[in-house]
Length: 526
Image 1 (cartoon, one colour):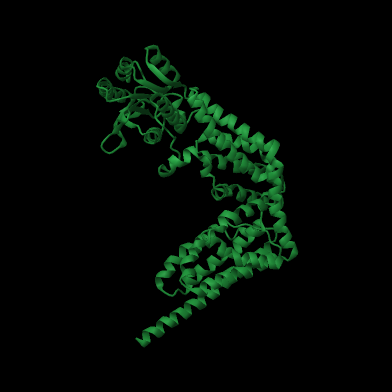
Image 2 (tube, rainbow, N blue to C red; image 1 turned 30 degrees about the horizontal axis):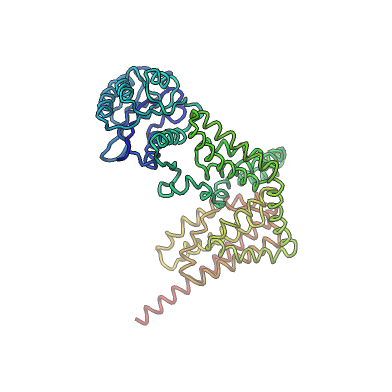
């Protein structure tokens, strides 16, 4: 028979600032971890005030949350002043106490509870029945322990998060009952696999895409530093370059470990120590920190460390350990690996810039359609931007993908084969021009017409060739009007962008006209 756990408590004082002010999220995380442990929620009695209990009074707005066993949801059962919520909670308290005495509840999770009033009956019943209790809230847990309760986990709330608290609770119950438990992290369907094999969450593409805003900020600062009177921003540019490994490390740690703030802290620490390794070093540091976080967090819980200490060790020691490994061992290798990639590109451009641009332009559409772009090309773009704030392949991206997509969609706005296609093309054109992204807007037109598809590749090749001819370095993911300002050759970038847009526009117009003639010819024969 599955074990059943009740959750009681309030948003508390310190807890209020560490997740308690969002009861649905806090309680939802506990329910998720219960599901992963194969444990059922028996009841919930949670008082959520709209301010910290350290300052709340009887008139403070509050609400009482409970568990609806039929719908399997956390529901709000009463709203009003804190005084009225305490009175209502006393009714739930009596019900939970009765469930405990009738042995319908096997364990109790306590968070900033009130053992003297709102939670008095349930806690006394748990003491009488010697139910295992896990909880946080230094003062309340001390009072509960003093009554002779069977405490299997106790801690303050400082340094904890919704997720780490929930995992701590269920780890303690799992060990107490001999239940196999793997924390649920991320997608519930993948949690069982991912939580005990965090390396399977490592995705370079996802880490790079999430870190992209940092690189765009770098490019913006570079462009602004060229404006007369703003040359002092050159120093800001130098600082941002050093910060990029930290950004990458924090994102990597968050995505792989997903232990909320704990993994972010570990990632930042590892990133600071990985600066000398560039963005590859930052990524290695962040990934290492995330793996250490999962390992140390679980071990510390098994060793019955207080939850606050668990978070400090998991976040602090993990970041230091991973960062020191990169700092002393991996940084030179990681930096050299990044340099090799950049040297390879620079060598190709130096050998024949026009040929390099042409090849890049011809291949970039097949690359993005085949899924290679985000996995391979984008990381290379970011490696280029790490040193200079812009990129050869980034410029090809803008002229060969964004502008070509804009040209195709514009042609279908001006002269579509069918009127309905204009409505489909308009948002894509506006997003490409206004934000420098959403090249996928051209897919419906490319995949339905071989001429348009071929035109996209040819236009991209020509535009890429001009990027090489003018030795342009730039970036996509910014408004098209702004893109030339972020490049090293404004006039050359504008010409290359125009060639991609105009070329694809004219070819698509011609393809649409041919399509219309064919349809008309078929209709006349019928």
